[in-house]
Amino acid sequence: MFDRSVVFLDLETTGATATHDRITEVGLVEVHQGRFVREWSSLVNPGMSIPPAIQALTGISNAMVAAAPRFEEIAREVYEAIDGRVLVAHNARFDYGFLKNEFRRLGKNFTAPVLCTVKLSRKLFPQHARHNLDSLMDRHGIACAARHRALGDARVLWQLAQQWRTDPGEAAVREATAKLLKTATVPAGLPDTVFENIPEGPGVYLFYGDNDVPLYVGKSISLRTRVMAHFSGDHRVSKDMRIAAEVRRVDWIETAGELGALIEEARLVKKLAPVHNRQLRRASELCAWQWDVNAHTTAPQLVSARDLPGGEFRDLYGLFRSRRAAIEALREIATAHQLCHSLLGLERRDGPCFAYQIRRCRGACAGVETPREHALRLAAAFAALRVRAWPFPGRIGIRETAADGERCELHVLDQWCHLGTVRSEAELHELQDGGSRPLFDLDTYKILTRYLLGGKNRPEIVPLTAAAAPAA
Image 1 (spheres, rainbow, N blue to C red):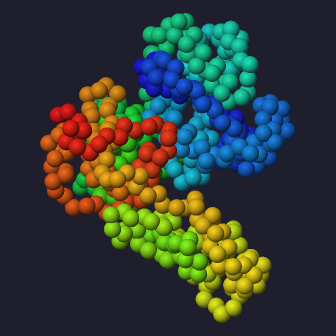
Image 2 (cartoon, helix red, strand yellow):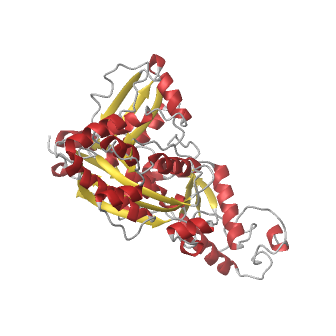
């Protein structure tokens, strides 16, 4: 625990069955190499009623979670907090099972190295019979003002770790932790030393099968920990079981930071089309709705985003991987906002549209509502889907420097396209002097908007000149 990045985690739930019950609160404490980093917590709307006995135990009522975000709304923040770190929890099987099932409902396979403080306590203090959290708090003199609340219990685990560092001592904790975390088994098709050379820093890892067929591409801020997590022996993850049976070679590409890893992962998945990757595949039908709010009587037009020169995204709404998805999204907007199917081009009919006849349209097609009023309502409904314009006058670079300062990269970008990553002035000149313009990519757009406009971690944006390149 003192040599790694770890997250002390606790969850409150509606019950004890991970496949049926849901999370009501998440609390975590992030620690890096034995030093506190930050803590975070959030109530979660479980989408189901909390039983009275659980409300009495945790103090979390249905009223408290009614306005709380659902898990899918905080899933990215939770994942980013725990990805590449050791997950430390009391009765860790419980918390880990709930996390896996929540991510599984979102179509994401979540795995992580897990350390159970119940098992750790038993190894450190075999003379004691009881190792539940209340017993450990009494034994070690730890008080908790928010017992059975997620962040309160996560704080208790962090305090326990600090106490154990003194008694029974850091060496004893390291030995016990190493035994408990030694769960990654080397697949039969790989050499026994496969994990030894994989670095702990950020980057992309690749699994290959027979005849060097690409099996899977992933990214992590901690490559070695993440690769080992795939082979942790969790037999509920069928994809990891198949990869373990098929893998014959592991490769990796180090990056200076997470942005580089995200961009490289998206590029490699599209280039290699690995067998077990489903997301980030190339969207050959990428399209969007183009519509001018001042053209009151003109229906939105479906256009190919790839055909727009230079990423000119004026009056574009939504980016969809297929025409079918775009049309379905427009239908859902029309239904939710009582918009006219005829004016939207979803229906060809003389006279009032069918939605108006069943009172699901406010009557722009029947003269009840003016075209301008309809257009303004459509603009409001479309607002959340508006494709962001490139916020810079031209090319920029985002500089990423590795934590140890030894690796520096400049990601060259223009019009939401990744033009390349350079590590020297010479590479920058070469990139500027040649090469064809890349096609617009939806996943790169999402990655960049999150980094440039999300406001979480302000990236270092530099003028795109030779002098801005990383030192060779």
